[in-house]
Length: 290
Image (spheres, rainbow, N blue to C red):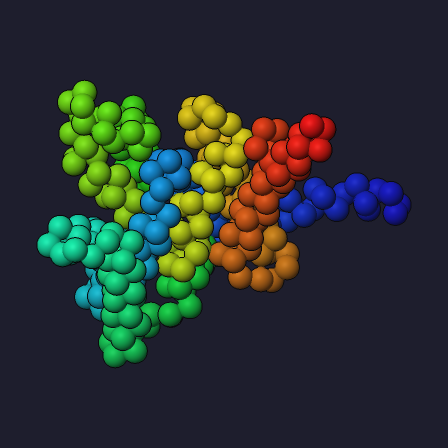
């Protein structure tokens, strides 16, 4: 009997949460958003846009508050402010001698502070913790539909312009030399980044969504030198981490967004240590052998 109980426990651990509709919805949305962010994170990693992802994810906060206050879809407000922050970063960079990383820091902290002020002043039912850390277990059907539409747009955009975006991220100078309009690609990638940040709000929130946009790509980058394999590994690791994070949060009664990001970080650490070619243990063994 005890042996049978031991064998059944993993099955129950997997199946029991699926009896709840809110868990099925959370798992579906988290896996989808994880896959989308994982795909985009490959381009972000190659481009070196970790700070830009952080900026956009924080800058959407006032848009969420304004949209809720006006009775509009939160995704619309978040997207407008996300794109607006990118445009403002570009404008300040062009019109001043301040470096881009400094401009990014100025803009995203200013927008984030504006969002905090609006939350404290605008009378609404907005839960600040929901905005900051996400709540996939409480996602509504309308929010699911919004996330599906946004994810579909991002996937189509990345697939249609995949080759041009890949070349732009690898070598923008070479892309310009062969006639590719890198200006359009620049703002296309930033637009897709804004959309992905909006999609990630439901799962991990504003503060942690940058991890979903960076960690999967960084993990896959340690495992392969081929971009095609990198994208596949990033999508698989991100979706897997999202699903496992939701399960862990359900059984452990912990914050879902934090659980997802911790699993992603753990997967990265495994790749960092044991990657066949670039893991530090592999490199240390090579050094010792010589």
